[in-house]
Structures are given as C-alpha cells and as structure tokens.
Image (cartoon, rainbow, N blue to C red; front, side, top):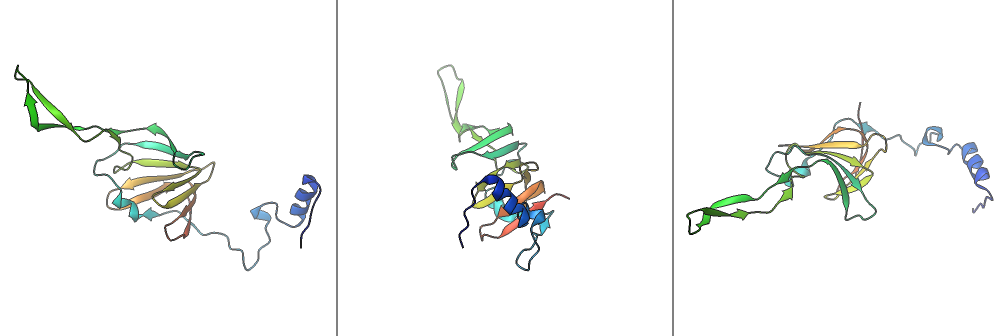
Length: 168
C-alpha cells in the first residue's frame, strides 16, 4: 500500500499517532528487542597490528567525507628513524656520519595509544559507530588488543556481528 501525505506536519502527526516518533515510543512487539549493551569489550585481532613501541598517543579519530581520509587531533607521537652507526662513514676530519634507518611515522598503533572515535569509522575491517555526545574510546593494551574504555556506540565485527557498547 502506498500513502502520499501532503505536508511535513501531517507526516509528523501521523508518525506520532502511529507510535513511531522515537524508539522510546515504539510499540513492543515480538520482533523488536532492545539491544543488549556491554560495558566491557576487547578486539583481540588488533594485537596483530599493534606496534612494538609504547605510545603516549591520545587522539580523536573522526571520519571525513572521503572514506580514505581520517581527521586526527590530539596528542600525537612520532617514531623517528634510527641512526645506523655500523655502516657510518668518517669524513676527512674523522667525523662519523651515520645513515638513517627507517622513516618517520606516527605511532598510531603503539601499545598504550588511546583513540576516541567520532562518527562512523572503518578501522581494519571493523566499523565503529559512535554516539554523537558520548563517543567510543579504545586503548591498545599489550597482550589483549583494542580494549573498550568508555562511551556509547556500536562495533560491527568482521563477521558482521553488532556489538552494542555503553559505559556504566
């Protein structure tokens, strides 16, 4: 059945009468179940991507209009290249000139890094959907993985399971 309603006011009135104005006014049926929220959750898969250096990083990660770009704000930590003294060369004055090993990079996934996730963000195949007023916060913990600390939202796992999180 198709119903066309002429005005937004009429549509809103219809929604209120039908009990659809908000989830709290939704009629309870056998099909509808309120989600079961967890206050503890660990994603062990993130142990695989965790860096070997401790990190004091405390950042907010937020989705942008481009799914390939993430906004990062907060306390950033950089890993600097190491000096290679084994293959260093001396100049004519005898001064040692070591070469650099590695590149400069963010220590985003180091042990101890803390991430506040705003909006909807995909990270290593997981989808994080944060509450606008109480965003999800995770920390990388050695031997455990990505550990939920606080906030409210949903994580969609690699197997498409929905995990509902809320701080107590």
